[in-house]
Length: 168
Image (spheres, rainbow, N blue to C red):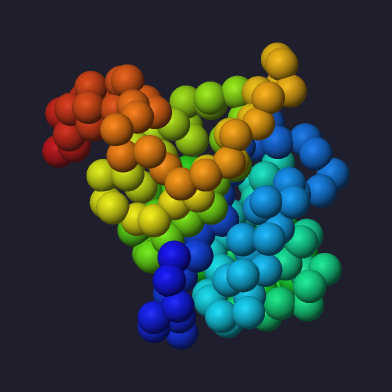
């Protein structure tokens, strides 16, 4: 994430609904603060867990350059920001939000499958992504850029194949 063209850069804030912490990790807050100083557009979901923590943090900062992405209905909008329907269901919403972003910060708890698929898509689209990976089993956390060599979702290609088969 460099400084060039920050006015057109859109940072996606995405994460697991299993994220239960009251506050975002310090590393994540620091990266969001970095983006705020560059007035980047923030795209954030409205599901429970990480998305609500992202929204609450942005609201606590009084940050206004935010779009809340949703599917059919808007469930949470902490800062009364602009909202945008990105699809008719969660899968469409997340895919469209990823495609609309230029980079991302993702909180991934217990290697959840939905986020694993999103990480694969971010990786394949070449979007610079910072990942905060957390395990509730052993309280281990890792933070850093997405690894282009790592397989986050071993079933990604199979799911894409069957998804295409289901389309009319």
